[in-house]
Each structure stands twice: as C-alpha cells, then as structure tokens.
Length: 232
Image 1 (cartoon, rainbow, N blue to C red):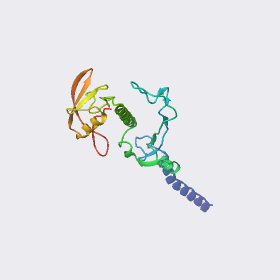
Image 2: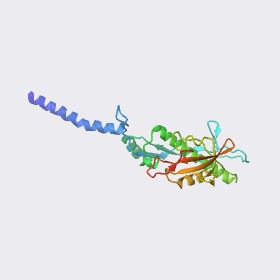
Image 3: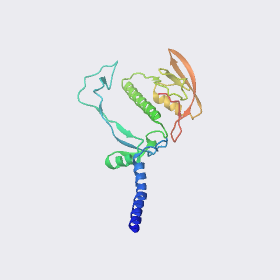
Image 4: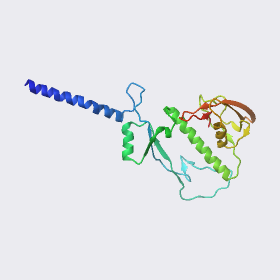
C-alpha cells in the first residue's frame, strides 16, 4: 500500500512539475504583459497585410473622398479604388506566430514601421503626422498638375516639440534659413540639411504679418537620428 501511494505521489509530482513549462509557454504566447507590472511581453515585430479599399470617386460618411474646388471637373463613373496596408503591432508571440502561419501577412521588425519605444498616444500622433504628410503630398501633386502656386501652412505643432510655442497652427512658412519655400519637401530638405542641436531661422506669415522665428532642432526617435521640429 505504501509503495502504491509513493508511486502515485511521484506520478502527481512529475505531472505538476512537467506542466509548469507548458503553463509558462502558454502565458508567453498569449499574455502581452506581466500582470501587475508595466513589463510588456510583446514581440518586436509588426504584421503587414492588405487593408480596406476605398473608392476615391465615392463618399465616406457623406463626404466626398476627393473634393475639388476652384477648377472645372467632369462627371466620373465606375470605381477608382485606393488600397491600404493594415499594420498590426504590440502582438504577443502567439499572435505573431498565428499571423505568420495562417495569413498572408508579412512579419517585419517593428522599427521598419514605427520609431522604437513609442507609447499608444505617441503611435497615434505619429500616424496622424504621417497622414497629414501624405495628404500634403497629394495636394501638392494636384496643384502642380493644375499649374497653381502652393504654400506651406503649419497644420499642427506636437506638444513638447522643439517648435512648440514658436510655430502655431495656420502659420504660413515663407522661408527657411533665408531661402523662400513653397512646398513641404523644400521645408523638409532645409531642415534635414542641419544637424540636431543646430538652430534654424524660419520666416512665417501670421495674421498677415511677417514673423522671424528661430528653432533649435530636436532629434527624431529613430536609430538614425534626424533633425526635426515636430510640426506638420
């Protein structure tokens, strides 16, 4: 009887100790942080896959996707679909493996998509800046096609950025370091010609009055530091 009881105890002991690695592995696959702490257990990878499509000749929430004013337009028909890319980050190991095995997503290092070590609010802010930059590029392309002049207007200023309190939304940037600019790319080229820590003179038109401002360039949160003032 004693031998049978010892054998049964050893069996249960083996089962319990053997299950510990399984439980730990299951937790690593499904839990995104250590409970009760801010320690994250997500993998440093992102999943890129096909996102939704939008008909640029149609409407979204009752508003036209493309709104043309001040120029003659022609009636359109059919569809002109804009494709998008869906990006998933903050994945657990299990989620990343699942998307790699069961979907056509491409798994890439997350720093190829976003600057590293950003919180949720910072990621949202980064995406907003990327959207505004994309929108500006499309606007410039359309204006060039119509042979219309372009100007650079500050859309927003990131809180805590080097230009915060210096530049303001609706400022029209007319010159950088004494050189006239009329497109976002000219502004970007002028800023990137400098190094972080250097100052740059910016001429803006605010309330129909010229203002000369000086901004000490900050550093972007990427592996290759680039100067930035964090305005869009």
